[in-house]
Image 1 (tube, rainbow over the protein chains, first blue to last red):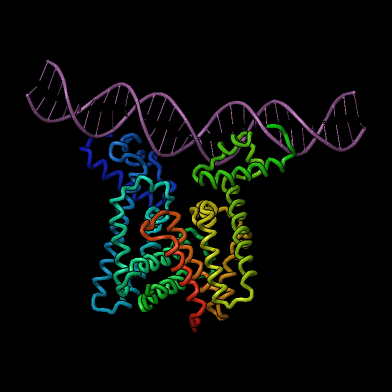
Image 2: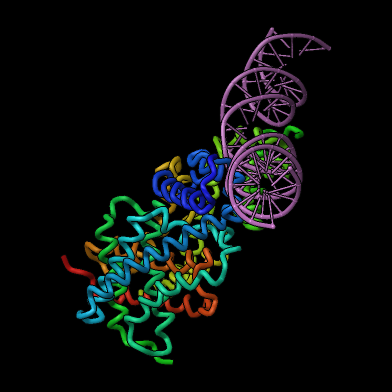
Length: 195
Length: 195
DNA sequence: TGGGTCAGATAACAGTGTAAACTTTACGGT
DNA sequence: ACCGTAAAGTTTACACTGTTATCTGACCCA
């Protein structure tokens, strides 16, 4: 490969990795095919990423930031609405992000924990930031954080089962989307659990 | 390998596959290590299973039957309870099955759709049977089937995020379990959506 | 002119799923 | 008792995978 000052190569690796991830899926993302596509040898990638997991972690980070950008935008657009309408928009945006960026969603939330072993704890910040946006729409109280997780989990359940193709095709995505969103909305109105 | 009449070998393959799946996890389940453990060559396995996916499909089937057995037992035990109590027990049993048989749960509901491509459509029956048990606890109506899916999805969301280790450890499993179950129960009491 | 440093390449190790061709074993019929 | 056949299992090979240790070549600076 012609030398180009390092950071350009790193960028090329990530660009191609994104492309493969979206076009062919995670399974096709191999260090060798990646190197072949950008015109370098596999070992060159190891100059910029400690290993394949580190590369994936970078993609996870990207995904988390994309998601945060989208959710933050929704919050801005619904600043004048009530918290129910805001949650409806937020849940809808999360759902759509998952299905429109399936391969990103997969590495972000579905990839085997083995690949997360070396995921630096610091980086979870960008992930947590996203979830807090859900919790913040809920009435204050000691159970607010866990209720935020619950909303997220339920949305994730539908999305991940759709992505994993475990739901009978006779159920339409729109139908499932609507139901998942309304369940999230219901938790905004619900009285917080006292304890 | 000493010859033993075929079906014994098939049984040995499945037994060892189960063991590896539960002890070392899906990632460690390789045709070669499997063959090594039962004392045959990798190609012998191909006499009994078309390929690795076919072997996994068999394990998925096993898991589906295990799950069905457990849920059916719960239904028997709660035959005299009301539908709310029955759903509480059902959801709890599903949740516990997922976390007590993580590796089974993974291949059943979380494994990449690529591995499902060749999963014979007929076999989905055993999967559907499980989900219908949820729907049957709901009030009758046109939206009953999809509401059953919704209950299942929400439960799956929490379980799969726990298995994938994407939930902050400060949230206890019991807390998340309770919340997930109560959300399922809430759908039994809810008025069905009229349309 | 000589070092040193950094980007990248070579070659190799250990592993993966899978297919074609080959060998061994067991059994049923003459 | 023998032999042919079919089943059961093995050998060998292909085309992949992630990863490492070692080596090469280019550039900058003293």
